[in-house]
Length: 195
Image: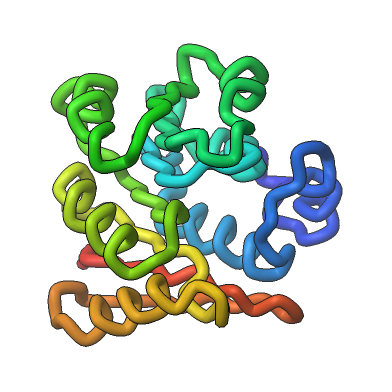
């Protein structure tokens, strides 16, 4: 991974190239540095539920290990995924374009009996959908992996916020980290079980 991106000004230059993620820059930088510290040798396999415009793919690619694969799952409700797939599809970037609940067997095929170190849930933010994504994909995550929920504090995403609160109070995870930005505090929650 490029160590230069751990400097905020370099990260900011990198992020503001197209496409720009919708996340707050301070929130995104803190997430990037936190994941880099948790996985200094790179992340082995990332599953992202909810790709939207593909703004996070460049970030995930910078965090992947040499053998890691990014798997983007999106139902194409916004009609943006064909362009994202055209732009980013490669040996390291795989896409499953269908409803996240129906995509589970396809994601399993792409993982090929491997685990993911990061599950990033940023699809439909209604509680039922976010909870179903969590339940359907959590077993794909390695024992030392991280489950991240985006929009844990955004007022229009109360389902994600509710799920976040339920999960941190479940006692299932040893650690949790809630990352907030400086302006638009949408929030990214990390659930961590490692020693």
